[in-house]
Length: 192
Image 1 (cartoon, rainbow, N blue to C red):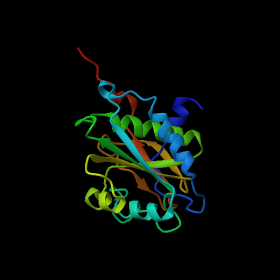
Image 2: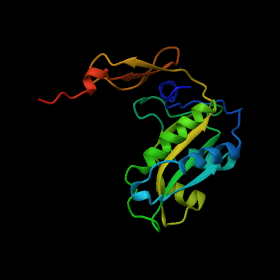
Image 3: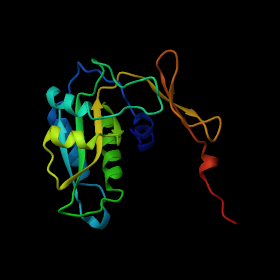
Image 4: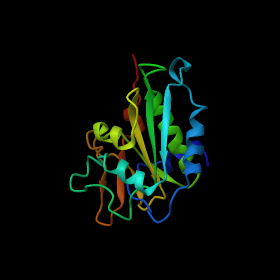
């Protein structure tokens, strides 16, 4: 797959085939990709918790908020929840500032997941005060992001945004998830 194809397939999937579990080693393989990623000042301060366990997954799931733009949707129902999670932590013993590193590694892992036929969702809406004790995460780690992963059980399509201010994602009557993207000419800034 080309990078463009990977990017087009790498959508924020929020419904999964819960009956198709992910192997823990698959999650570890996704984390291994992050060793190749650039890191601010090459400090490499990020660490990861992986879970393919239904018991731990339930704890993680209870600490996440899903799809803020879909006001009437509380998140994946039983049977369509992620089968794996990667929690991205910042190790404050290595650095106090993580800059853009969490986004770089999260996108890299999601692209690698797509390459393996998986899908995921990058979540920052996390109840960190609940997740830390639920998993026993030591205080010297900050909780940066959570990747929810699994076999996607929904269709996500890219649309051209009709209006510059109308970029909120939505679902149609058939449950297809639509993601409006701004046109290229709106992204380019021409300087005098």
